[in-house]
Amino acid sequence: MTSSAARGVTVKDLEHSYSEEPVLHGVSLDVSPGESIALLGPSGCGKTTLLRLIAGLEKPSSGSMTIGEEIVAGSSWVPPDRRRVGMVFQDWALFPHLSVAKNVAYGISKSPSKDAEVTAALEMMDLAGLQDRMPATLSGGQQQRVALARALAPRPGVLLLDEPFSNLDTSLRIEVRTEVHQLLADLGITSIFVTHDQDEAFIVGDRVAVMRKGRIVQTDSPQALYHHPIDQWTAEFVGTVSVLKGNAASGFANCSLGSVAIDPHLSGSVDLVVRPEQLSITAGGDAQVQAVEYYGHDSMIFVALGNDQVRVRCGPSTKFSRGDQVQVQFTSDRALAFKSD
Image (cartoon, rainbow, N blue to C red):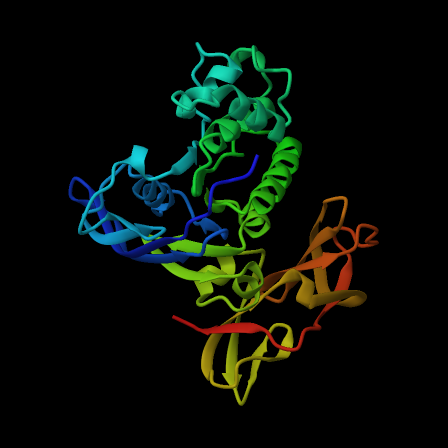
C-alpha cells in the first residue's frame, strides 16, 4: 500500500476563539509535502485546536489555510470530508460495534476495491488475521494500530495525530511511536503530530513547532531547538536544565560554576541555562550530592552548588551517592544565557 501524493499545509495568521476566550493568536505554519511536524507544548496551549482547524472540524475566526494547492479556509471553506486529511484521535475513537475490518473500511465504503484496500491497510499495520475481531477484544497497542489503519486506508494527503500514544504504557508507547515514525517515512506522507512529550516530538518530528499560550514561538529541527532555543522558556521546556544566576561581561558570566563562556553580546544580570551533559563531576570539593536518579542507560546526579542546584548526567555505573562531597565543572564551549527579567 502506498500513500496518495503527499500535500503540503500552509497556515497563515490563524486566529480562533471559543466564545470570548481567544485560543490561537496569529498562528502561521508551513509544512512541506512529506514532512513530519510535531506540535509541542503544554496542555491548553492550542495544539489540538490547531489540529482540528486543519482537519476542518472547526472554522477559524480569521486567517487562511491551504492544503496542497487548495484554499480550505479563508476566502473559501472546504468541509472536512473533502480535504483528504486523515485523523487519529487521542482516544482512537474506534466504533465499538464494528469489527476491525469494518472500522478500517469506514472511510472507503464506496471504493470498488474496498476489500483489497482494507487488507493492505491491516497488513501494513501488522494486523493481518484480526479483521473479524471487535475492538474491545484487542490490546491497547492493537487498537491504536487499527485507528492508524483506518486513517491511512483512504490514502490521505495529510495525516493528523492528536497525542495518539498517550493511552499506552511506557514500553509499548516507545515501540509503537518508533514503528509509526518509520511507517510515515516509508509512506512519504505529510503528518502533523500533537504531543506534550519532548522525547516524542524529537523522535517523530522532522521539525518541531513549539506552542505557548496560543502562539507558535519557534519552529525548528530538534537539534536546533535543543541547542539554539529562541528564549529561556523554550530552553527550559525542551529538555532538562539547571538555571543559574550570573553576571555577564565580555563574553563570560560569573556564577556558582565559576566563569562560564556565553554570548558576548550579553552584559549585566543573566540566567544561564545549563544542560546536564555540559557538566562533569569528580570526587572531592565543596559541592554535595543531594540525590541520584538511575535510569539504566545513564544516571542523573543532583548537586547542591552554593545556593544553586545543578543536574549532571553521568554513565550508568556512577560511583556517587547522596551526601558525597564533589566538584562540578562546566565542560562545554559555551552556555545558553538570557537576560534576567
